[in-house]
Amino acid sequence: PWRRTSGIHAVRCPLGMAIVRELWFARDEIARRQDRAPGRILQDKALSELAAAQQPTPALMRGIPGFQRRVARRHESVWRAALQRALSLSKSDLPPLHLPHDGPPNPRSWEQRDPAAHARYLALREVINEIAEEHRLPQENLLTPDTWRRLAWQPPSDSNPDTVQEFLAGRGARPWQRELTAAPLAEALRVLEG
Image (cartoon, rainbow, N blue to C red; front, side):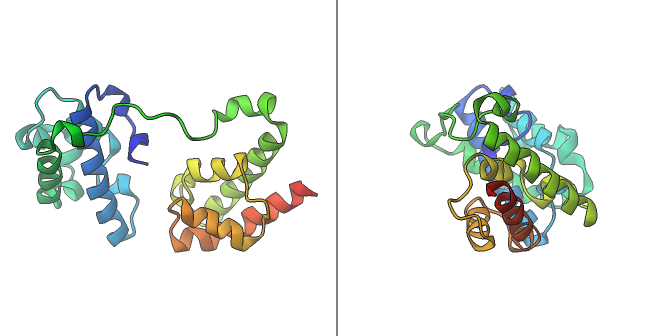
């Protein structure tokens, strides 16, 4: 999931990818402990900006606006440690720039490629929107778009709440996210199955 960091397209070397990865995991750990959205701890743009720099250093990090925010400054030692971990990796331990694509295609093509998947996509998107609105949450905090899109593209063979819950857990959804979404998503899938 760290490879979906906004702005990562500007990172042009394996070391930069390692920096994004280490910062992403450090930020995610803080966010999990605080039960906050990772972007509220440190914005993706800040991770990518540091990783895209020719010579990333702690001094450069402090000059990036995202790292200057009060919430991010509280965790400066964590960011410095993550940066140091990335910088100390051997070339063989650096992540590759690109991985083969393993997810579903862009939803814009679903209507032509797989009309049934497109119908599931529309139905699940509506469910996510309704739940997010009801709980006054951003959709992406309720459930990552990649997670529910994968569910729409290749749902479990038995779309009951338990199997949907397992699917969501396997994609990293937190217990409260699964509690809010598994049953309504399973119901939407069952309705479409007829």
